[in-house]
Length: 430
Length: 157
Image (tube, rainbow over all chains, first blue to last red; front, side, top):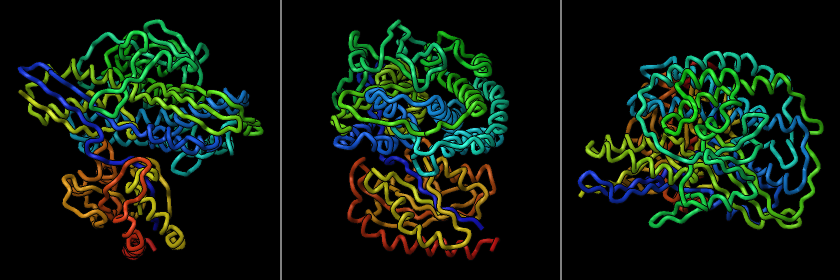
């Protein structure tokens, strides 16, 4: 018999962690505030005084769903500061590791968090009763993503092999090759999944918005690239804090990101990436986007699910390519000599651009850390979505209104630990 | 046996701490596997193809009512966990209750025993609260007993 002892890091399940306050009179919104809990603030303080070498072990604890994103933004930034050149094998292995996270996170969101909303089920369990085969397929695809992360990162709660300079242990070819038939199977399932996404009843929330993502002339961006926006901006992570400023919002602990010059919100995530990189989607991913009903430009955030389906497909295709061509980096670690200065980097977390900045002392000690997760960058945009959406449904009973508001927020896939999927709805009707 | 929690979030670490403390004793038992998983959804994958599991997790009664440090024991039925416990386990979109519920719907559900510890402070960076720290040794004993019971009842030797 097999008994298992499983440890599951789930960030605090706290009521009030995510809260939506609405004050309305005669069908008009007087006040609307979305509050989301943000653990990175704690980690920024926690990182101070630590060695640069500890950073890859500390930052993945910020998020149970996207630990790789936190490691990759930190590692690339520190390597740029230290002038470390990693081998092509390291670069490819990092992209594969990140693809695993995209597969896992996107499939989880499409089928277990968002689809039940779109279909009017209270949760994924209720949906699974009516659509068991679909949910089984989704879980099997998601598991491939988990397995990629485990094979490369290790079996611990968080990936432990990624280091500044490379990997403490590089995956072997023979460990990765068994993934190929499973990835081919997953790829064959994606067009049908696109049809499911296309068939879901979708609310409309069209609006003008500036979208921001990385761009890279050579590949669909994940780890490397400049930043760009649909309003024509182009910048490097080094100037991120000059382009985007965080604003303290009254009555809330949360910080809202705004464009520094215009004071307007912006939108990051899969839909932003597809808008800015559509031509670099892989062949089946393009087909999936088309079948899911997504064509660019598209600014309606409810098309995010279609964008996730396209990107999950891209991650599967990229994983196949990367495994087929994989040559383990030898040695797995480049030499790292710390130097003082400022490290900055952005990578594309499943939820959107994730900015890290480290001010580092001569011996490699972290003097100050700054982390801007995608969820907090989208927060103001989410609020504006709700401001547009809520007046049309304000006549619904509280319970239904709560479900609809959760649907709007959940559509952004707010990071489970950087944010929350549970909303306390506090509505005052005058 | 499943322990849940975040190591950096006060009382939320209780499931992890109990499992780690019990690990040396449990790993000696034939057929018992100690796995550290990622987020709650991974429990779905881990419950596939096992005969039984014991879960330790931090819980919180939705409107209070249980003293901090109280340990509750509940067995998941064919429908997963009872709704009142489910609510306390999952204010996120997908928590342990949903993971167990999903396995119950999609697969032949294994026997799942949940030990829930009522918690108070789950702030990132905080330490375990005193009432929760105090119950840790008892909880480790209970966990080992539960695993031994589950092995006895298991169809496979």
